[in-house]
Image 1 (tube, one colour):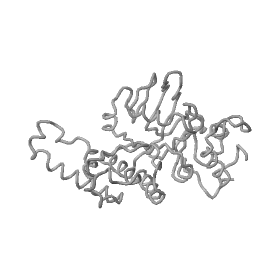
Image 2: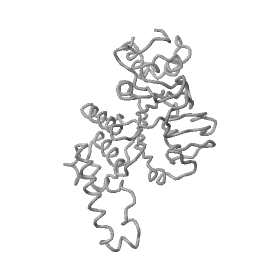
Image 3: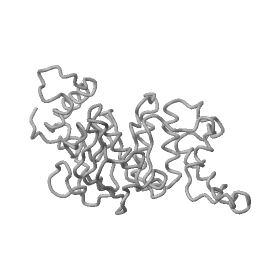
Length: 304
């Protein structure tokens, strides 16, 4: 295996126009939607995140990968207001998000899903969807007492929710409790609910985790459709096959830092990525993330 091996000519790279200069950690993007500078987070003596600079390209699907404990979900939590960094700053669409609470981040157009779904189980699927709509007149205490002020908007939100549920093949479940859905259906519901706020950036934390294989292709298609509809997608994922097939750009984290960036076909041959998954001393048993290592080896073999 050569570090300089190129992707097969029959599979054109999808990263044209995404970055400026070499594809190195922290490289400049042509049109970044998210810019991160000097963000760090520690838990006791553990450095969970230590990102010097990172830019996420607009209008693309970016995968954030790395071995277990690399800091991926912690970085998601920081960027979406669910946790606070020790230091650092970041901007979304040119606006600073440092110190902005999660609900305001979502209202600005940056929404996320969770590895463990957050559907409200004792509400119906339709009610979960309507909760995702923003700027609802009925949320005001005074207006809530006067239905004629918000009923028309409520009807419009229900129509929008039903249209989205149909796309996600959940319309027949609209009156069911969310708790009655399967794990994969709850993933679909969470993604569908996120679209109720008309987001600009959708952040998915391990969208394939716990999903029945029968729903895997459906989820992949929906993620690709987000891009087709003009949204930017940033997702954390351990499924390397998914990363290779849908990601335009890949960011690799290890021990809290960004160690590699690039298109999925060349990143998986980057020595820094191999070291991150195998450990720097390949001949020693360092408790490497063996499940992901085997997948990585398989993908490398496919590419060579």
